[in-house]
Length: 196
Image 1 (cartoon, rainbow, N blue to C red):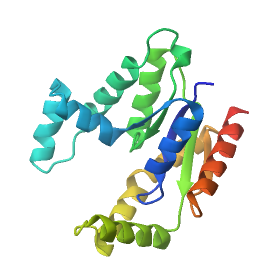
Image 2 (cartoon, rainbow, N blue to C red):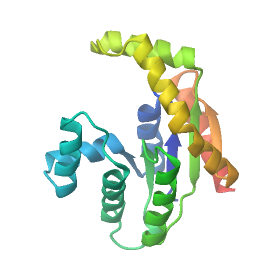
Image 3 (cartoon, helix red, strand yellow):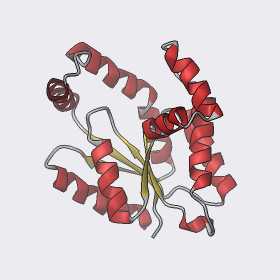
């Protein structure tokens, strides 16, 4: 099975960890927008240079650049039969306009999304997780007010994506609280319900 999944969830919910574990389980690539950005910037691609221009000025990279990078990445993964394309997208789409763009990208590639998995977690729990991670990794800028702001931005901008996938019957919510293995097992079970 070549799963094509969007992984949603607030900062600190464990998306990166779970995307890697799911990718290994399914034999597909976990694709994070952060990795795509870094690869384009390091490779000095035209899109990478454009993204660097924005980030060096402290500005957000516009959707048009992000969309183009995701399109390039997914198109580069097709070497034969498009139905064999599999991935777990972590960090994209980030807004409803990007959901529509992803639909268009996949339609152009001749495939469709299997669905979206949303890792849910209580704000207080993820705040504690992020504060602990900040302490371990020496992230002085990850203070409680900053983390809570990131969570409110997530709720405002990204949570509407859940509504879109839910209306399509393509969203499964998974409790992200618990041991890493437990959450992975829940996600694998949730994938089976998407396949039905």
